[in-house]
Image 1 (cartoon, rainbow, N blue to C red):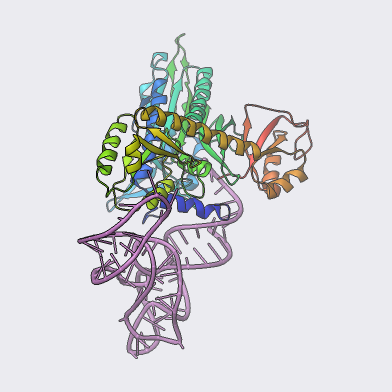
Image 2 (cartoon, rainbow, N blue to C red; image 1 turned 90 degrees about the vertical axis):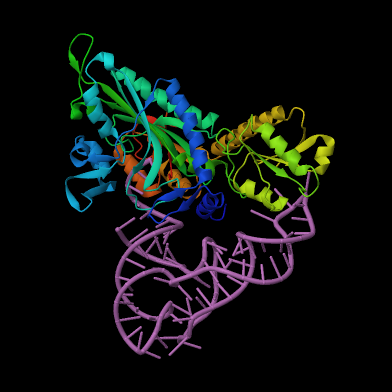
Amino acid sequence: MDEDFAKWYTDVVRKAELASYSGVRGCMVVRPYGTALWENIRNDLDARFKALGHENVMMPMFIPEGLLQKEKDHVEGFAPEVAWVTHGGEEKLQERLCVRPTSETLFCDHYKDIIQSYKDLPKLYNQWCSVVRWEKTTRPFLRTMEFFWQEGHTMHETAQQAIDETEQMLNVYADFCVESLAIPVVKGKKTDKEKFAGAESTYTIEALMHDGKALQSGTSHYFGDGFARAFDITFTDRNNTLQYPHQTSWGMSSRVIGAIIMTHGDNSGLVLPPAVAPVQVVIVPIATHKPGVTEKATELCERLAKSFRVKIDLTDNSAGWKFAEYEMKGVPLRLEIGPKDIENNQCVLVRRDNREKTFASLDNLEESIAALLRHLHDALYEKALARREEMTYSVGSLDEMIENAANRPGFIKAMWCGELACEEKLKEVAGVTSRCIPFEQEKISDVCVCCGKPAKNMLYWGKAY
RNA sequence: CGGGGUGUAGCGCAGGUGGUAGCGCGCGUGGUUUGGGACCACGAGGCCCAGAGUUCGAAUCUCUGCACUCCGACCA
């Protein structure tokens, strides 16, 4: 994986059977294993959203051109990458329809109809869907023309409530990454240059991949009342005066699957965090030709299925083949059971992350497995965190920035004056973009790394996917 | 969208001085195996990316597309 990270990545996607290329440029077939992984991610996140009062809806996949154009910054941001439907059957359409690249405009159009009074607020909607962006270059999960995601769109009585929602949802994403994906993230705010088209402010969680490149893993936007004004959404407030509601949107996409691959994967393939792994324990019976082995292993599988996502492999592939196969697929725990184990009322448990083997009694096996899965999750997180720390460093001067950006992959911490010109210059001379203004600030120096004028903030810089 | 690379069996590749194709893995059947990618036998599988051109004849030569891929620029 160190020689050619890009090839390693696409090999893992293919060999672990997450996705295949399709006949459609830039679009992938998400295979059953990849789909099961996405479903687990989705169910986990969905429960977190619903616990906070959000409701799921389903919007149309088409946006009439006129609707898309209502908010100026928004259309300018997305116009270059939308797909247009111009014909219905043989008939040319009166008005072109774009295939949604994101659904702010559709939600606004609908909110206009259903929001009349402060009593109608807040509206906390979310949808799970796919969207299309006409990307120039694509890679499975990281950037595809059609991708899968959820987009939350909420409307609030006051600016403060909307700001609170924006921050709350960013925290939901960050907690999800840590608790379910074992991926450490940096929480922060995007600079104006990097913020979402039409947003007042954009918040982000940034993760660092194995190769030192950053991956934006979730994002949450505060819109103020910009869209509400553009779409003429108004409500009567508690003092019987007409107001514009305040809005947010937030999204996390199937791209996080890319983050999982590039955060935890190793030379043997994928390594999946137990919380979302389609198979948490794979049972490999040994010497199935010996009497009783298959029966005992099957019985064990049925028993464990009550507590874990478990699979038994009874194919006649060799044991060694199965070991390699499930390592490639990132299954967190392998359970081996053979004639010798059966005699001793035990089995062998092997961790995917460090291949550590332990003999476990069949009597309290559920506890042993649960503990190992917990330890594995923690170990994945600690390892990823340690690597991120190792690859995060500070620079104080422009020369140092250029030198390090070229030779040392990772997050680069540096002070910034707040000017767009400096961001553009750093992009040009060092090839780095601002990842975020982290909530956890630290003072490296008093002056901007680029222009030397007084600095406003410390930023994370880096090369991004 | 700019620069490079690659398109031949499911996958990885070879072949190519023009004469309709081969290897390894995988796949099917039968058998022997099974604690780190087992083995034997038989077998199936290809408009050689697409279109046009040159030619008696094109997988091979010439154009033109398209797809994938890597490196930039742009974006979740």
